[in-house]
Image 1 (cartoon, protein in one colour):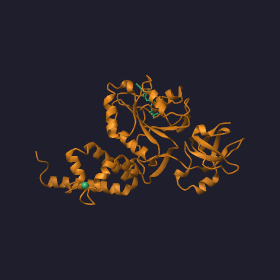
Image 2 (cartoon, helix red, strand yellow):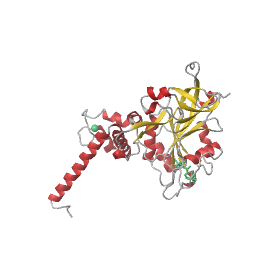
Image 3 (cartoon, helix red, strand yellow):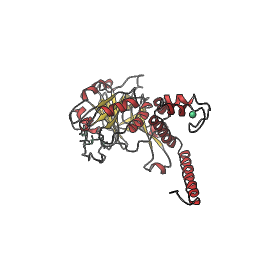
Image 4 (tube, rainbow, N blue to C red):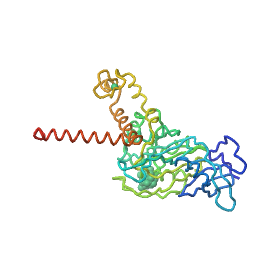
Length: 357
Ligand SMILES: Nc1nc2c(ncn2[C@@H]2O[C@H](COP(=O)(O)OP(=O)(O)OP(=O)(O)O)[C@@H](O)[C@H]2O)c(=O)[nH]1
Ligand SMILES: [Zn+2]
């Protein structure tokens, strides 16, 4: 018999008669793999699920705890989704390019994790901005962020990037590691405790599968060689899965996400930039746009250097992206207005006889 506690299960109430708890470890199309005290079972959703579950986010995904009708001889039936203590969602543009999506739905990609490993590589592709974007999503997911800088063996100088991340996010632990040489891996034991779940986030090619493989002590994921000069690699991770590490911790691996959409990230942004939002309360005007207004606390802080320029720009970028997801039409309107003003300027320039030489 398997003790589900080892999989992070905390019994909040006794399951109704006929149902047993389990944790979803894999999802392929409509078929679930669920670990239960009876062992690993294959399961499908009960029909009632499709009638009562409203949004797509109500459907179980990898990491979820569920109650199911155990079937010894065939597929078990998932009857209930248990409350999630953390979840990670992305905006799903339904296969459309960002500007062309008609509907944007919340897609839950992982749940019930304790830590989010924000994985970024130390090769030329290293960008603090991107890490901050992942951090924003992590902050509202309910998981604790840990920044993992991979490929330490390729970096001539480890210190500069570490300091850059620490400056941008002083309250978040950062580790430089190499899955090839093993450097820095010991420091991860702190997080990889029995019953704990970690989710790996990061762009394709940063080394998530390689990290998972060393932590597993075996190859569970195919690692595809990429050209280090330009970081181009093909997607190798295609579906989501939960792995049990030898340490007793679990890892959820998600496909490399190139266009990670922020979903309802307002809370996360506020948590990461409360110093900025605090300044807003000090502006002379309530509706200050922090552009040219007199008595603007943001402009003052930018001028005296107490608000670093990059921090302010990062805030604006994240807000803009989030605005797009929250309200696509307002984003498109802004964009149109922006194009219009550029067009008007160009017209004006033409009228005045072109650009001054
Ligand atoms: N030098 C060095 N190369 C690494 C390290 N970790 C991974 N790589 C290389 O980076 C490339 C991509 O690694 P993967 O582990 O497949 O990356 P991934 O993040 O899982 O990529 P996706 O599956 O596409 O999301 C491979 O060529 C690895 O050999 C490392 O610590 N050092
Ligand atoms: Zn202002």
